[in-house]
Length: 142
Image (cartoon, rainbow, N blue to C red; front, top):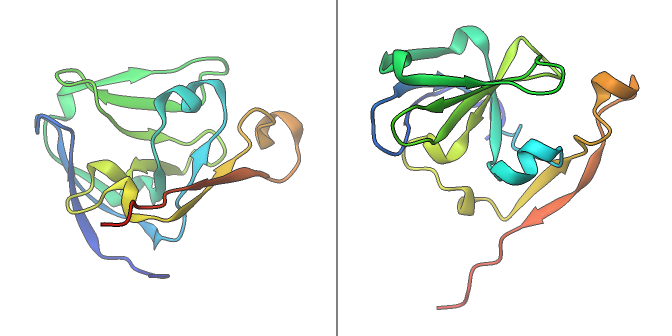
């Protein structure tokens, strides 16, 4: 729902890292990325402002990974290895939140998710962000 600013509970797989988050625009900002790292990670992210995430427990269990320019900061649980969120390279004032960490949400809840062109990243090209394609999930008929 657009404008949905409800607070969501979220956690890594093992529960060592738990947090609350308000998404910037509900699930309207869903995306995947085609950069070398995100292709391998495979998560669907939604945006949240930096100030809209509150850690309830386990912030000290987070591990940071950066690569290439070092601008994007990717956080993982050091216990179970699940990616929880990252500080976005294209907008450092926002986090990308792994929607699979949000209580009651599955990446398979979304029939279509835009895949952003991270190979030709706007920070490198100076151009506007481009959609590289669309990821689709079609549930098997029961």
